[in-house]
Image 1 (cartoon, rainbow, N blue to C red):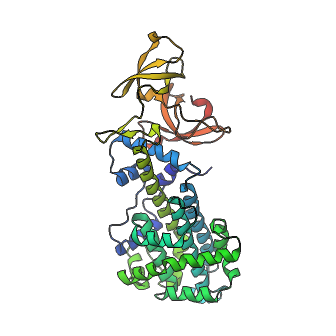
Image 2 (cartoon, rainbow, N blue to C red; image 1 turned 90 degrees about the horizontal axis):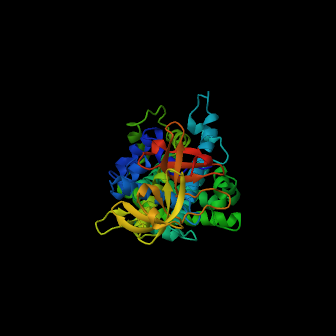
Image 3 (cartoon, rainbow, N blue to C red; image 1 turned 90 degrees about the vertical axis):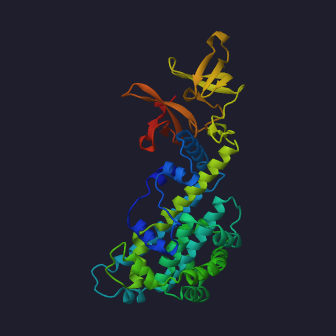
Length: 429
């Protein structure tokens, strides 16, 4: 089972070699990137919200959106993870051949087939294509369009997305290929047979995501993707004045580099960092959080709440609405209709019972009835439930974030994400 977006963002490192490398490149775009870690913290930073109830509602809506198969959040995450892992595996194999050898890394590269420039160029080209496809998936574009992506890159990219593309130019372009990296890429593209690209392990890893009915179609799309962003890369280098030497100098302020051979440094960074996955998770989280906030405001999901005239998110429940109410004595949910609303309390009439049973209910014990689990699962993502705690001998209110056949991953209301956990279905009501 893949991790939830909550887990992915909460588990991002605050300080490792990937973060150090990204901080070293921050001088090229000062103030643009912040290493946001933790999903609730990201909600606060991205939306400006500080109300815990508002943050929780955005969080719940985000969880539901992330698991919607019609949206591209999970696909984008998979793309970023796949390209980084394949890239690291290839770099690890190269470095393994150097263990115990006292020869320069450049001499070692000269023995490789295909040549190092070819391998690195293919790597860069595929990362560009992955970024293009991920952008289109996140923005609901059914067919990846290189020109639309290039326009967005030039005009709309910021924060983690801009840092990712900056790192691509520096780590996968300038360091291994030199100042004329764009010219070298053109040489490789025009002089390389298609089977060298389609046989590359990184291509094999992401092949299924690339549009095209044949290997040659896919190679053609890869070339189109690069040609669309070549101008942006050239302008970036010209505007910032970045050089391989300036990158190396800045890296040296954050990490110790034992060898100043630029080729060695580039492959070492490929092997030890996962900047595509790290910033990719942050980009997906940003888009997801903004989409969750926007759709909650529009009232697309009653459980996520609506914006009131005062700017606060209300419960989304309304007089006359049929809901389910938790009965602590019977330890079960009962169907009821809301008759009155007073702040965060609700006067309800239980369906099938007399008016003498009508009662005021707190929002914690109220839930929407619109969550329908699939045939394979007992519960649905986003559903409010009660979870039994054996030690405390008490029921706690929670929101389901992920489902398996026999377990659910839940977030407890009014508790931070450190309490999130997998619980058996028989502990849930």
